[in-house]
Each structure stands twice: as structure tokens, then as C-alpha cells.
Image 1 (cartoon, helix red, strand yellow):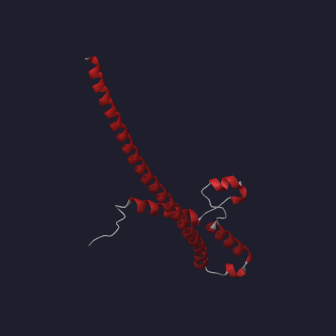
Image 2 (tube, one colour; image 1 turned 120 degrees about the vertical axis):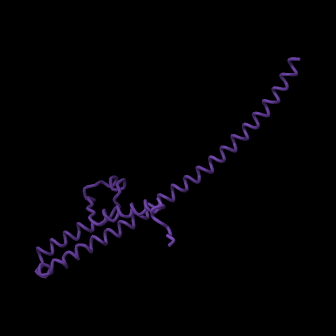
Image 3 (cartoon, helix red, strand yellow; image 1 turned 135 degrees about the vertical axis):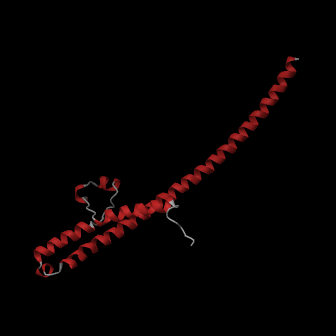
Length: 151
């Protein structure tokens, strides 16, 4: 049976999947320290301003619900785990998507730079070839003149 787009042979797809997986893990338990960072540090860090710590937020809400709500305390353990995992899943999906989009932009930028570099190298090669041909033509003319002068 024929395999389409096998991941064993496609390094670009594997790199994109790895970046999305890293984003999913980070997004599930993201804990941001935005109040403790200066605006300059936020801009230069990997965190996006306004990023929401989904895993930490659902853990906090679960603890608050346990302390304050008799209804939450009456829920089954399985449902409490489901609520915690829901927040972590949402965070992992959002962060994986953001990282994948960032990765796609980076790959496009790198491909464009490589394409532009190849065009520039080709242009330099043509320019050097033309300069060498012109220089060789002048050198041959000088050589002929030198022969005539020495006689």
C-alpha cells in the first residue's frame, strides 16, 4: 500500500510537529509571571502579553471551589479531574496553534532568505564572470601591444 506524506521522510513536518507538541505541553501548565516582568522583558520573552495560564488557572479555580463551594466538594473525583483537564486541554490547543503559526512564519522567512541569497549569488557570479571576461580581453590587448613595442 502506498504511503502519502510519510513523516519518516519529511523533516519539515517533523519539526513543525515537534514545535506544536512543545507548545501543547507549555500551554497545558503555563504559569506566567506577567506582573513581575517589565514590559521590555515581556516583549523579549517567548510569552505573549496577555497569555492566560490555563492549567494554573483551572488548578486555582479547583482549589477555590473545593474551599468555598459545597457543590464542588460534592462532585465526583472523576468530574473534578475532567474539569481540570478541560482547562489544560484548551490551553495546550491554544499554545500549540500559536507556536505552529510562529514556526510557519519562521520557515517561510528562512525559505525566502535562502531564495533571495541564491538569486544574489547567481547575480554576483554573472557580474564576476563579466568582469573577468572584460579584464581578460584588456589583458590580451596589452599583451599584443607589449610584443609590438619590444620589436
